[in-house]
Image (cartoon, rainbow, N blue to C red; front, side, top):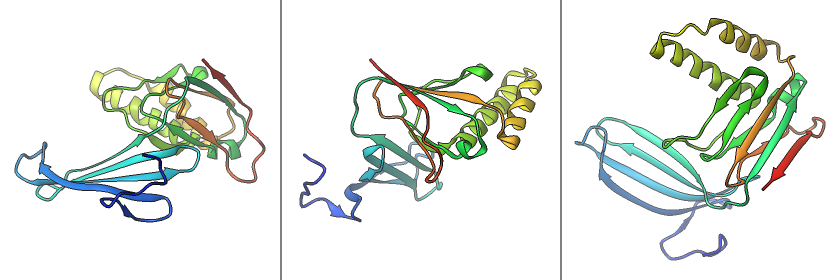
Amino acid sequence: MSSGELTDEMEVLSYYGKKLGEYSTQCPVCERGVMNVQEVEYEVPSLGPVLLVSKKCSKCGFRQSDIVPLRGGRRTRLYLRVETPAEYKTKVVRSPYAQVMIPELGMLMSPGAAAQTFITNIEGLLQIFLEALESYEVLEGVEVEPLKRKLKSIIESQSTSITVVLDDPEGVSAFIPEPGTRPLLVIEIVS
């Protein structure tokens, strides 16, 4: 079905979204409550059609939201050189299939079974890496203070030049510059 077609079961929520369905099931967390699940097809600029799935348990309050890209393409590897504070505001759209690398810091975020699509900016991406380091430090009992200090310094000053690489086998991930900033130098490798 094309994104423009509607069936009787679909409810138009807005110009960008159509409710595909809603159902209930047993909560997998507490096993006592009713998990309400709602699915909406939504058109996201620069990402295309996505399936938004929201789940909420009436008993324990567990919530989960997933964004699943509905289109894929050829593998892309995007390189973004971030050099100014304004470029730290560049949006990062990461599909659940993509790796994110920052070579200067030796950081790699690989997709896993529970990986989700997220949209943040470069500053937010660095914050995600920082939180992962803090969790690693607690769970593994390994001292990573020098790297944490370096990340905090980069986040605060936004004056360190870094390279961010998105390697996406589905070709969905993207960099989106802030309006009014200089055009991004993004090198795209398609395989």
